[in-house]
Image 1 (spheres, helix red, strand yellow):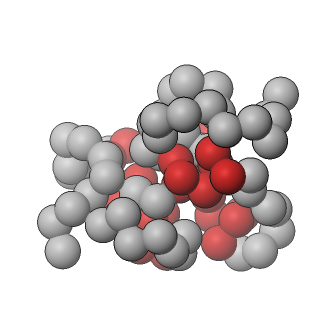
Image 2 (cartoon, rainbow, N blue to C red):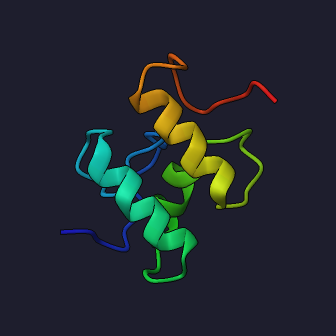
Length: 80
């Protein structure tokens, strides 16, 4: 279950808060960007996959997908 408790250090990309970064996270992140779901503070921290710019948007989703498809090796994506 996703809680509102802040879990501490971000695991970039893990918006489901299950300790893994996978396609389920990408789907949920896109739902957030489409304003279908809301995120708690920890999910928002974890979702900031692009440049740590404090915004959750399509750039974060692209960076997460680049990570999942091994185009980039780590998150956050700091390669502007």
